[in-house]
Length: 324
Image (cartoon, rainbow, N blue to C red; front, side):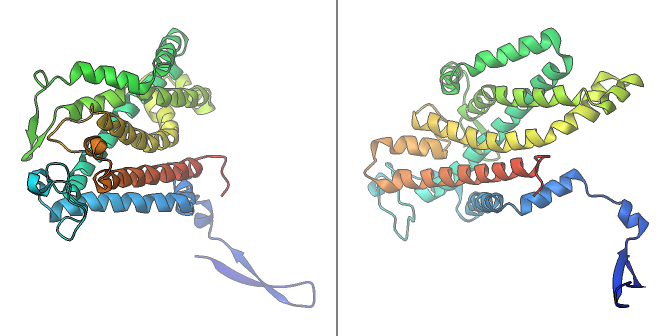
């Protein structure tokens, strides 16, 4: 509680109010995380991005509750390439499937690929960056040369080679999960994207670790005999959280775009599993039917914009030099 005391002013006998804080309240500070979240809430573009992502999430979630999956796979060639109408708001594809239903269930797979590929990317990149930065010496040189070698090769080229090797349907058959049938290439693409995207994360984490491991509290932990694992996970890794969160956010957008590239080239997730990318790949030969490619493209654009806006806001909010 704050208390008010009235004191006589030396000028004109006027009274002014002086606020004194309770010592317990004065001692209580604001954490860096709370301060960062407050800056994030004031970042207008980040809030716009969060609203866009909320819209996409509700679209694929509520849409799947209202429209059964059977609608997305039912085909009737007699209604092929019908323009948007009351019965089919987004029109139909080349074999008469409802594009609205396919963008809902395809969106679920695209978002799943983006999030899980990001998790693979962050786990591998953070582990390599921690090892390289903390161990130093030969381990640092070898790991960073590996990362630089992979960065010198275009990611799309690496992904195409990996998919050609691991997408054989005879070796990797489709599977059923919770009553739905999924293509095995969905899992292959998750690991292909994740294992070809970790290099930038590792470099960012390594740079933070090189700075943190020289701090006084890390030296103090070593002096009292703390094990290296304890130092890494209790003192070093928590200080890498902010750049990892920002990299993870932007990594989802990059994974969704790469999956869309592969799907457009016909090397993405194999049928019967729809994604926004392979829907656009199917529409490549029917560009005159604008509704075929427009709706999956607009969902990809909104999702990537939302993630990038939110990622920029997170970067500004977690920047320790920011005073806003």
